Length: 116
Length: 107
Image 1 (cartoon, rainbow over the protein chains, first blue to last red):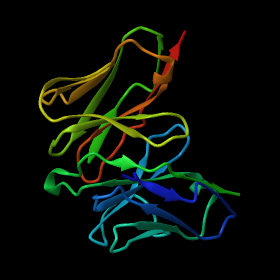
Image 2: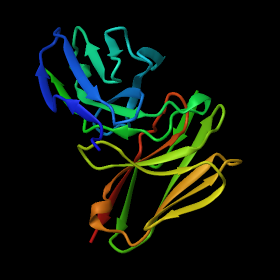
Image 3: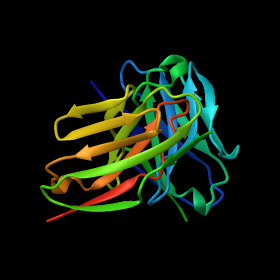
Image 4: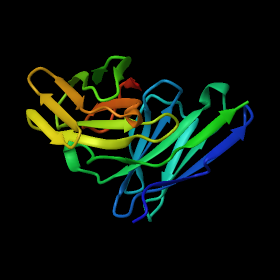
């Protein structure tokens, strides 16, 4: 049973460019959440997708956008990259879990984005 | 909103026991997760508590007191490989993490 996969593993971009990161959830999971993790910090919630719609959003600018496909895979897009966007981007999948919140999330290995 | 507080860093000796505390404030409580994250890697799920008391899982145990908004992770027989960050997160939508506790296990 494949776990959560992300691509690419590492990425180097320059300021002002755009980037797309990809995530395939664990088999059977229907919810995908994206997190940004700077060095020495906990993961910061960007947004969550369920049934191909953005369900919740954290405190991130509109430069961060996403998409979920019918097969539950997801993309994170970041436009007009800034140096401060350099971080580890984590994708996590789970079952929706209803009003109580998601069941435990399973994280992918992350994409290390460096903006120069 | 949510507020999560954990010690930033802890150091313990191989073979010892260490307790990592977590206090939280959240609107509507549905349980609490603990995750382990090794440097440069993704967090991995450790435990989930929804009722008060101690949940034991091998060398790791997690305790919850809902009335106090308090949890702790207890690691026994520490090994060098336990050096990692430990993150607590109240179960909610979205799942919000604190900064985590960086544990260093020394010989």
